[in-house]
Length: 150
Image (tube, rainbow, N blue to C red; front, top):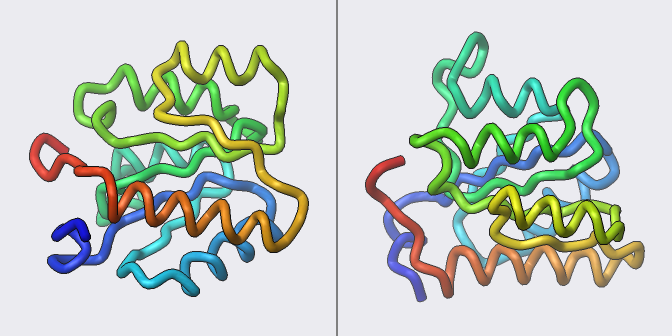
């Protein structure tokens, strides 16, 4: 197991505007065995403010992982991803695209913008929970994440 999970809770930023999906993701993470904190931004502008610690987010934690929906109000997921990956301080944070879009153009664009992976949200409840658990286990138990430079 990754020793990072023993030291402190892993910080996850979920950028999602669908309340149902937010609740499902919260539930899946609570069922998981890993120590994690979930912060939520409900639109692209909130996500950017959170990541740059502006305004009400001045004390926001630096996420260890970002779960990013593509279909967001105010600033879409592609714009948020492009901003993250062009910022020297933010680009090392892994970004998992978690969206309902199965469009090949969205997938291609996401990878061109340096998304770390692209996952289509399952419609089935159990499959959705399994996907979230798999994301959490992979990124926090298998992968070695940077602790410096964030």
